Length: 82
Image 1: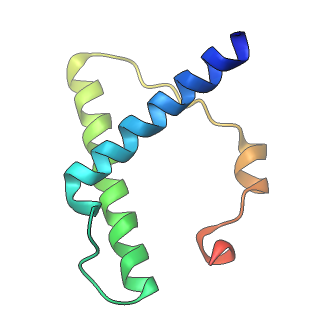
Image 2 (image 1 turned 60 degrees about the vertical axis):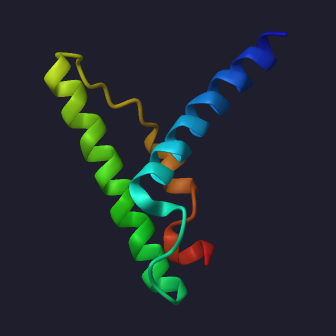
């Protein structure tokens, strides 16, 4: 049961982030071609992240970087996954 709750909480966070990207216009690609569509995705994700950071800074919530550098090194980059 604990594993389900952990997975469900993670899924809920991911679903909210995907919904935010849809609100920002990622539902339909504006360009033709994989590289231009990837550029649109990266631009939209950047806007979503910057608005999240700005809203958290405005509300006074401290920002913590909860990043494992080992996981970043082991994950494939954008060019490797295409």
